[in-house]
Length: 78
Image (tube, rainbow, N blue to C red; front, side, top):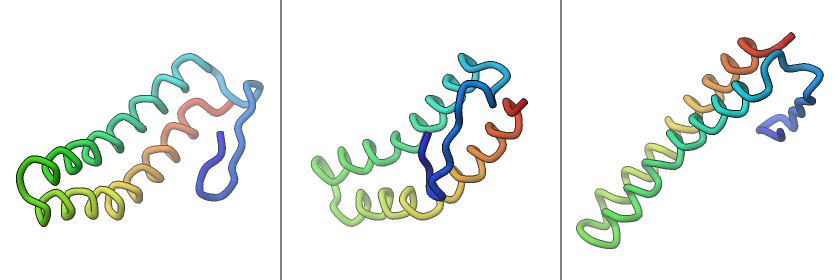
């Protein structure tokens, strides 16, 4: 997997690959959900509100995603 620092992870470095992949999938889903919600709000209701939702997700959400990935990596690292 490539991330903000070009970090790669091989199967040999992970204790439970299936659980690691599941945790990463959930993390990406949680990050992308506000972007989808913001898009729907922009298209249906309010441009300012939808843009603010996406902006918060792109800033605060990105930092939270990096922190979450660090915990996931530590949890499943051999």
